[in-house]
Length: 578
Ligand code: ADP
Ligand code: MG
Image: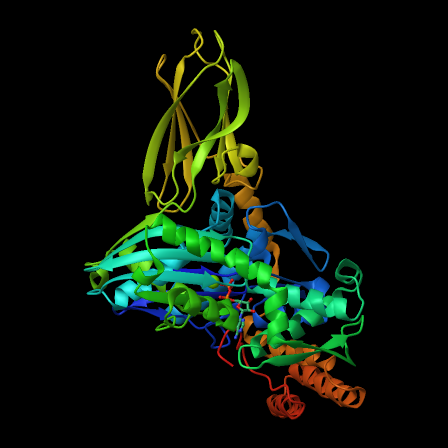
């Protein structure tokens, strides 16, 4: 059977793993690193991916894109060097790179993958992720929830355990909470809750907004008119946020409109950080409480709290957990790596690998799925009510049927509007799509129509209508207003991706150094800046000279210069404990 790779396609970082010789292992990228920043850039009309694209975002914001996973399942497009890309296309570029890393590592072609998504990703977002996989030339065998993947690793390494775990996953842009029971190798997810627009980046953004406020600048103005200032400030706030894990006060420099550092500084204490992000912390609480309630668990019944995702390193999060559960969270496996490793365990389950033959896993549907109905009270019809068909935290795969009735004699048309959410009225839920029929058989008012919802292991919904009177069936993958999985659309996106030139991979490591050094230019004083620029020029020249000795000398010179300026070039260290 073909190799199936496991991919954690994150908002900030992506990783790839494979199940080999009885265990999941990570696959390094072309830099020898496991974490590949989810960033795409264009240099000389060529695509760069990962660390160098992330650095490019700081020096030339218009030539790179980051955090595009936030727009998965929407029609929002990002512009990079004047070219437009949607979120699946940018994600496909990252996936293609990971696929190539895996092929190099394994020494053969890879076609199949398991891709993880935040548990709270809705139907649109899941389909968009699947589409990204198809564009990248991957056959997506399964989409699994990120906390479920993390749970699989804990379950895999602790198959004899009998305990209840809570997994708290706060990444760059999403938040998920999952409760799971392990018993004799069987892993049962009992509840999942979360928010798909809450992550570590929101904390950084709040910091940046506060800093601008302190110096009398208007956030909207800066965002639109001075993107260089904004991205540099975000980078500085990101560093400051990490320092606040161990320090009680940080100082943040204010960049000028070109993004260069000035002498002006604003300091922020941990308590101030806590205060300006209190609204975000309140939003974190709700899913934790809901997950506990849905699995009918009390905080003291949770044996272990597992932290996943880089943003759980913030003291705010660990302090909150300690307060609520009265115990320290556990991080037996690296919070950055565990999701990708879990995707590889899932791949092993799909392949029936002997190492996982005693493992059984059940997952749940994280939200309620239903449809719009009309309610009648006081002899009047009221539209806009939500009828749940599949309740949240139902074990998947699941298929449920509800019957609706026509409202008029000889009614010919019927539209089933499908929603996801927990509110009584559909206007407060998310519309997933609709299924319309126009040829109902003639019958008096009250003709029954069966509506079946099937939610599969990938978390993808299918709706089927059945008319008992004539036996006709209508089935749909919902008519989304987002890009759907139509064959033509995939093909045109594949062509677009093939039409892009990628930066030669063997040269990318050198390019990364240049981009990093350029990102430092704005952070040093005028005198140091000039000499740094000269050293970069010399290195760039040496890169194209073809003379190995000259090149090595210029490289060493640049690396030493960067170190002496207090900004040593490290390969991607994002997310590692600093
Ligand atoms: P994703 O899965 O969404 O790609 P990650 O799990 O890689 O995200 O987490 C990225 C987030 O974690 C970012 O918002 C980053 O700022 C935050 N983060 C990483 N390391 C730290 C740290 N040491 N302290 C605080 N936040 C951190
Ligand atoms: Mg993640």
